[in-house]
Image (cartoon, rainbow, N blue to C red; front, side, top):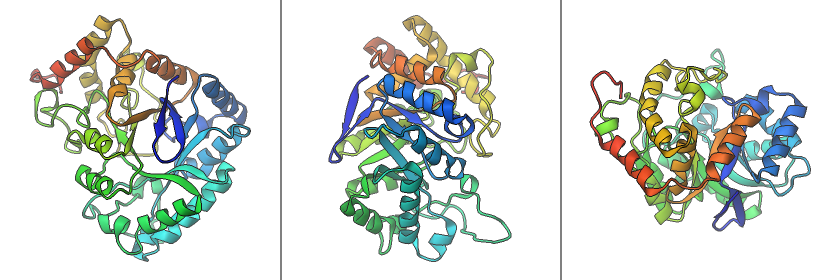
Amino acid sequence: MQYRELHGAGLKLSEVSFGAGTAAGLMIHSSPAEQRAAVEHAMSLGVNAFDTSPIYGMGCSEVNLGNALSGYDDAVITTKVAITPEHLLTGSIGQCIRRSVQASLRRLRRDSIDILLIHNGVHFQRLHPLTADPGDPYDPMQDLPHLTFDEIMGENGAWQTIRELKKSGLIKSFGISGQDNDPDLMRALIGAGVLDIVNQPLNLLNPTPVAGRKGEGFLADVEENFVEYDHFCEFAAANDCAVSIISPVAAGVLTTAAQSGITPPSVSEWKDRFPFDGHYARELRRAAAFVPVAEQAGITIADLAYRFVLSTPGFVTVLGGFSDISQLEQAVTSVEQGPLPADVMAELHRIWQAPSEPGSGA
């Protein structure tokens, strides 16, 4: 296992991070003994980085991870804060962050948080109206509102409180996580020097953070909610912002099991997110384009997916959501093979740039 340094924080992260999210479920649905065994096995493989959030299992993920990591004081933990509609409507973003951090510290059984990420997506303008209707209970897995630039950088915005928490030592690094951030706003925040790290979606199906463009070749016909990141990772790296890769196997589509017809368990509560929104079959067809590349290289499609992200500018770690130990082992085995050779990368670029075939769904 190789380790990458998060500059300015004194942290070194393993190239594979252990995701304790709702979709994977291991840190939520398994028994305490299974969770402890998984963490011990991860540490034995050299994995020292773990990612969780208060909204994963409504706090269960943090509690279970904190218990499972008991005695592993050198583990690097990333958790998040979800800014609610109520706190946006009342202008109490700072209060929300402070309460969330204190609650996370208790659940994780830690004195400080290594990496704190805002879990909300960020956009220049609100995409949906804020509601705080007592008759319509807030569900953070469904109703997480977007934050605007002013709500992060303005007076009484998130950054004011984050800066104070960093100064006090309660958090060491700060960043943003999200599947649907506005890349231009992310660039603005990085340019302002406020982000140490970002959780960035990147996989073979959407390589635009490092390669390709929407509307061209393989990406000529993608769904309406497809986000074009326009080589975002290069900008992040050039401005000293580390990149943590999320969704490397596209919710399991880029695996041998999926290509063999075995669908992943639908344990996520996100009803409007792939693959639980009816796009699974379509993305499975798109993923099939990479099977011959993997076979020619003598590796699995999951190997191809994991190794592809290792050459990402600014890369520090790739975050896998593991439902069982075998998936963890797959990620570690893949990453330990190192970045893809130049000829394989060239073939990937050929696919991304080639016109899609009629009826391919790509």
